[in-house]
Structure formats: C-alpha cells, structure tokens
Image (cartoon, rainbow, N blue to C red; front, side, top):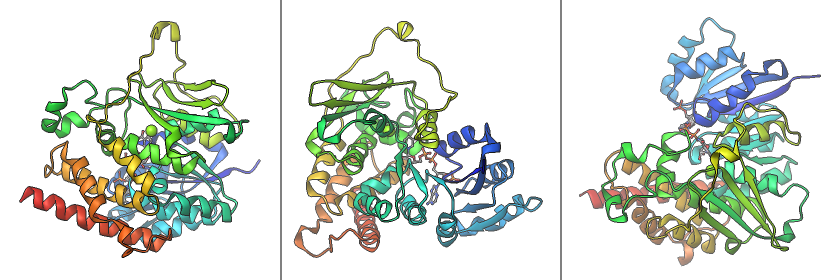
Length: 392
Ligand code: NDP
Ligand code: MG
C-alpha cells in the first residue's frame, strides 16, 4: 500500500505536536511532505529530520538562515516567508493538518483545499473569518474538511448516519476556563499567568487565555454555525467543568447524543487522521464509576460577554466574523503585552465591531479573500487605535 502523504501547518504548536505524536508512532504509513512553524526553529528542524519531511518552512523570513543552519546536514529543504508557506500548501498531499494559530492559517488552508487535499481543520479562525469561502473552496475542489476542534469533532461524530434536518439543537460544552469560579468583580485584576493556566486542557497560551475569557467558545459557536448547517438559535453553550462531554447533538425526537472522552486533543486529531475509519488511539479510557458525576451550569454572560458578541456577529453575518476575530486577536495581543486588563478585551472587541461596521455600505461585504484580508487589516488598525487611546 502506498504511504499517505501528509503536511502539518503549525507543526511546532500544541496541536501540531499532538499530530506529530500520532504520526511518528506509525511512520511506515506516512510520507511527510511539509512541516511549518514560526519562531521555534530548533523544534521545527528536529521534527522535520525525525519525520524525514521533504521541506520545513518558517513563517518568519529573518529566521531562514537559522533554519538552514539546523538542517544543513540533512536532506530536508528549508524555506521561509508567506510565499513559501503558500507554495508548501500547494504541494500535492492526501491530508493536511491546519494548526497555525490565528487568521494567518486561512490562506494555507485555502491552498490545501484548492489542490483537493483533505483538510483537518484545527484553525477555527478560518471558519470564523471566512466560513463561506472555505466551504465553497472545498466544494469546488471536491475536498473534505474534517473538524479538529474537540467540540466540532464530537458534533461531527454525533451526526454520522443522521439527517441534519432532524437536528433540533447543538450543545457545545465549555470548561469555563481559569476564572469560572472567580468573583466577577475580581476579573479585571486577573494576571497573564493566571489566565494562562487552564484547569483541564494543555493547550497553546493564546487559546488558553481565550478559554478564560470564553472568546474561544464564542469562536466555536460561530464555527458551529458556519461548518454545520444549523441556525444561530439552535446552538447552545453549557458550562461543564470536567471537560469530559465535548458536545451534544439534540434531535427532534428529544434524544441527546453526547460525545464523552478524556480532554486529550489526540482523540479529535486521530479521528480526523483516520476518518472514515476508527483506529486505536493512545488516549486514556475513562473509568466512569471512578469519575462518579458530571456537572453542568448555564453560562453567565456578565462573566463572559464574548458569548453575547458571538450572537451579534452571527446576526450580522457577512464579514463581521473577520472583524470579530481580528479585534479579538488584537485585544489578546494587548492583554499579553500588559496594555489591557483582562476584562477590557471584550470591550475592545465590542468597540471595534461598532466602528468597523459595514452597514453604512462603505465596505464591500462580498466574501472574497481580498475583502476578508482587507477587513482583517482594517479591524486590527481600529482595535490598535482603541487600545492606544485606553492606554493613553
Ligand atoms: P500554538 O500557539 O501552540 O501553535 C501555533 C502554531 O502556529 C505554531 O506552530 C506556531 O509556530 C505557528 N505560528 C504562529 N504564528 C504564525 C504565523 N503568523 N504564521 C504562521 N505560523 C504561525 O497554537 P495551538 O496549537 O494551541 O492552536 C493551533 C490552532 O488550533 C488554533 O487555531 C487553535 O484555535 C486551534 N485549536 C487548538 C487546540 C489546542 O488544544 N491547542 C484545541 C482546539 C483548537 P512557532 O511555535 O514555531 O512560533
Ligand atoms: Mg474547542
């Protein structure tokens, strides 16, 4: 049997490393084409050599010589920059992991779909910014998109063999993140270290902070709306501190199908890697008797205003998702840099959504890549301005 050709975008990150963990266990079956990273050159080079990749790419032009140096005694080629990332995504493969963080993941994902590869999509920002474009590109090229976000993998699995028309509601669970039990009036003083410590999941720093603010869940609600054919009003968020039930699909006969598993991203990654089959995965088998109970709470929108903003974005449609994401990325940068308080992130996003409003007809709302990139840029500029004014 010929080996499956795979590429991993964002190989040095949390999802990328979990993907490599699975592939490295079974290297006889895979031919690794491209691995990409950004700042972590040593890890990128080490994995590219270990997996015998054809090419390793850093997103940062200025790090090319470092990467070349690390790879000089190996057959792995080195490249750098946006054009190199796009070129790598155009190389024919069977399966691509899209695990770059942020809207930077959009273009490589589109390129991978254009060449007909199956896209394992962890980069939820692609769907939030440009859901229609991503799905249309997949359609036009008969390419498959498989969700990797744990909630969306759970929903996807819950829908196997089902008719989407029989779905009444989709419930995505949220751990509640680092501050689920904090008094609301103390949230403004939350530090970066406190926001970066997730109670259940071991993830990259940015998504961990987004979990504490629920911006991650807000993005996932939009991701659900874009990926699955369901209305905004059919999507519910449920706080479930144990993070064992990842999502539930509710059908018109009242049945709720829950997906239960340990908080380990290798399940969703492995499901997307082996789909449509299931294969043995190295994840913990839950002992439910030992766990004893699962708990649930309704989400409090005073604590987590991001959830309200997600509904506004879905109601607005068009390019509002791209504005939301760009503003959120800028606000997160602001919090990480110490320019914003934790609670100011949602305020900055809300203000940016108000300022960059295309209802006035000044912005072309058609979903093209150029328009998405334009509004992404505009939203970042406005968000930075708003952050600067606050700091000043
Ligand atoms: P990480 O921050 O751990 O990793 C991000 C990856 O993207 C790294 O390889 C990083 O390179 C690379 N990168 C960073 N900036 C750029 C850029 N401008 N251009 C190209 N590459 C870049 O993120 P995660 O793995 O946590 O998340 C990846 C994606 O998966 C996100 O969209 C996230 O929302 C989603 N996701 C993550 C989950 C998780 O468990 N972590 C769960 C569900 C979804 P380097 O490190 O070398 O700088
Ligand atoms: Mg998730």
